[in-house]
Image (cartoon, rainbow over all chains, first blue to last red):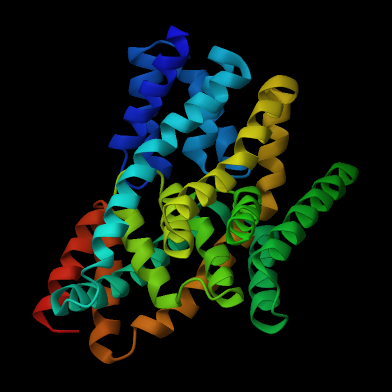
Length: 180
Length: 172
């Protein structure tokens, strides 16, 4: 019972103190789970994180679920996930309900007009990061261009794009093995 | 009914968004076209708030979209939908699949997904840019901000606060 409460509280803390998720979350996960609690070794944590990156869903949630399962089985996994999402739920619900009353305030309108511009820059920045990490050879370049073409000209949904990419990646792997 | 739909749509996003919070954006853009839940302008606002509040971006976005669509219950249901596939898949991986060579197999499978996801986000960014980059001033601001992000690597919240001030000063 104590371990479940511990799991919840630790994940709650990580959820509360991470701004932005993704890479920003790794140092916090390391500090809490590897250094303070010693539930996992640094190396295992990096493995969990790497698996979290390539399994569906939010990376931080995946990593927390993994640790939770190892410490407390299925219930542990669920509790860790709950702990991780709880701060988001509380804070976003609060902000959203407060903002609702101010959305016609002229200052808020101007501020958000500025903010919407920077969000586009943030998205572009994310694309640059993904480009550097993900597009390294001709194969990945071809997937990138093919995906764009399917999006622009064939009106593919994001779900279809991901499925096509998974399948193509899989077939490419098989083909590479044959060649060896 | 709206709850069932929210849960289902966010389950799909939780299942298909591989690689982090920003990857949810193309899926949320698709939702804004498919249903009458929120506008594309709302989506841009929600991204900004999700980036500048604590917690994983993807979870914040799900909570926000859920709240806008179906109130308090909607926020909780959408978030539950988003994390359910993760929890199930990770438990399966932890129980049956976890071994060094298998995790490298998964990483190799990703070979195709990473560039596709880059294309998805680029396309979503292009669509959203048409809403907010409407004149020379806004294009110049966006380019300067992107340059700063590349050079300085500050936290997104810094740029979002700067943009809010710019918006008020220039009365955008």
